[in-house]
Structure formats: structure tokens, C-alpha cells
Image 1 (tube, one colour):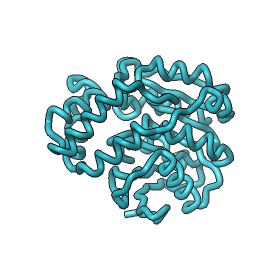
Image 2 (cartoon, one colour):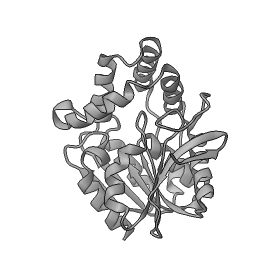
Image 3 (spheres, rainbow, N blue to C red):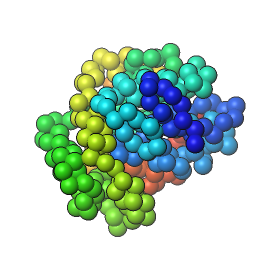
Image 4 (cartoon, rainbow, N blue to C red):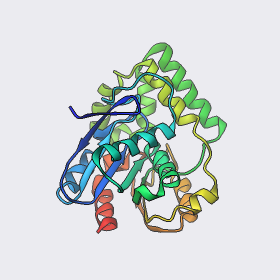
Length: 263
């Protein structure tokens, strides 16, 4: 099991190896590196695909303490250093996208290109925060009860009738998430700092955006607003009928877009 000691954490990662352009994938809230299985399968023959579990999620040996998105950024940079990479394509989904944007702003010299999946640049209003604060507190008090899992899977994965196989797989994983994981993982999501329009306009890297048209977690209109600010968007791919985890549930269009973007 590949574990890199980075910033006093045991960061779990997978590296397909090879001499191709490196792509580092950063997953979304409550997910782990495996949400990119379809991307790695499709792209690894030609690209070096690297993915890691963020603090609180997956197989990373996290210290159990509070963290923020800049810790995720630092862990990604630390992993690049561990692997001897000066630059990489940075691909972030949802919360991983929040980290990817901050990485591009803070460490522009380490980014080759930027892939933003099901994400946006802003901070959600207080009513959204109150919903996730309630989810967090219920999880901490009662654990991953079925009504809570159903609510989250509908938003984060999509309607059960459309993507039932992913519900089954992730329900088993999410049932193992502890209250401490959920508490600190949610806080990292909710307590993120605002990114100004000027900061986004300063991102000069080539950008690919992919987003499900039926995303209720981050409505596509928010990604469209972000796209208007980014100066070098090469393509905005709208994935028909897909919800929040479009790269996982509808990978064909996403993978094709990534391949075209990198070629």
C-alpha cells in the first residue's frame, strides 16, 4: 500500500507510472481516490495518472485534527515533491476542485494545465451551510443512518434510479466514516475562504471544465459564472443528464474531453 509521509500525515496515493504527462486527481467531499477509476483506466496507457486520498477520507493515515483546503494543497505539492514532479496537470472534482483552484493561485509554477470537474470558485450562502452543518451534526451524533446516506447520495452521486450501482458501492464505504472524519471533513468544506474574481482572472493556465447538467450539489450555472472569469478556458463540457459525480457516473464524455484537452 503506497503511503507517503507528507506534512505529518500518511498520504495514501496510487501512481500508474510511465513517462506520460502526469495528471494528479483530487477527489470530492466524502469520496476517495477510487472515484477516478474510470479516468485512470482510460488515460493511464498514455498519461501518468496519480491520485491520492485527502485528509479524513479513504486510506490516508490522517492525524485526526482540523485541516483546511490549503492543507490539501500542501499535501498535493508534497506528493509532487515526493514523486519528483516539477509540474503536473491538476484535476480536481468538487472539493478537490476548490483545492485545485487554490493550488493554481498559490503555486502557479507547479501547474501545467487545470481540469475542473463539478466545481466552482465561490462560497455557498448561509442556507447551504446550515444544511451541511445539520448533516455533519446528525452524523456525529447518530452515525451514518440511512436517511442521511440517501440524502447525500442523491445530491453527491445522483438519483438512485439512474445510478443505483454507485449508490450500492458508496453506501458501504460511507457507513465506515466516523463522526470525527465527518466533523473535520465537513468543516474543511464549509470554512473555505472566498476566492475573489481578480484571483480567478489571474489564473493563466489552460483550463478544461466538465459539469453535469443536472448537478444539484453545485448547479452548473455556478460553473458557467466561473468560466466567464477564467481567461484561458479551452472547453466547457456539459454532461447531459449527469448529476454531481459526472466523471464517475458518466465517464465516457469526461474522458474524451480530458484526452482532447491534453493532446
